[in-house]
Amino acid sequence: MLKLLKSGLITCLLLTAGLNSNSYAGELLTSFPTEINANEKYVFYSHGYIVEGNNPTPVSSRWGMYEYPKIKKTLSNDTYNLIAYHRPKDTNPRTFAKKLALDIKMLVKNGVPYKNIFLLGFSRGGAITVLTSNEVKADEMNIIILAGCGGFVTNNLDVKVYGNVFSIYETTDGVGSCQHLIDRSEQVKHFEEIAITTGKGHGAFYTPIPEWIIPVKRWINQKK
Image (cartoon, rainbow, N blue to C red; front, side):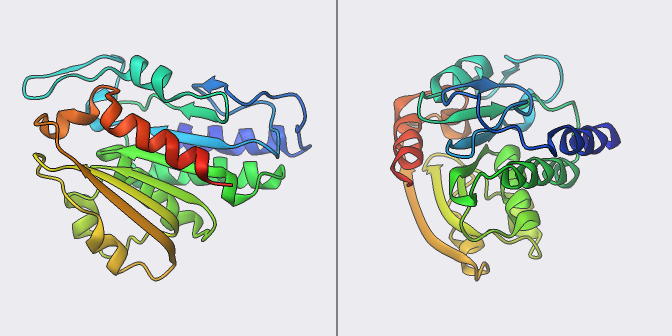
């Protein structure tokens, strides 16, 4: 994980000059952009724990295949840039959150306002999303949590979320509402939450089904 932090610092050094005019909204990126447009939106998608490692389509005996490539493709949109890192196996959530915080710092340094930055994460990725918000502490940033307020968020009371928060959970999943996180987070400007019922449990977010994809993309696009 030290490599991840060093990579983030190197990225900061490379982009200090302020590259800002030649990127195009709608890009699907697997690494930090080399060119930044201050007028565009940037969405960081953090996948679930099962995808950590080398396999982009791992299979759970309970929830089936995690269709990471298909999710990335379906989440992408021509109105924003989607950044989706494939995390190494057994990534430390707090360390990776610090890496994402460095990325956000670099976007802001190059003129991207916090209101144009979105953190989107599912399950372990949702916890990382919350941790990153806790690192950055920006009340204009946008946070989307997909079934991510489970044990880690519940048990680590020092972790809070900031800004505009949108939560989606599945009613047949053991991971439910994020209301307990919101209740302890004083800097939340706006909170919206919806429940979906597909009968797929946690696996509802393993595939890009309309029940969660449509509201996520709608929420991103309605933010000005």
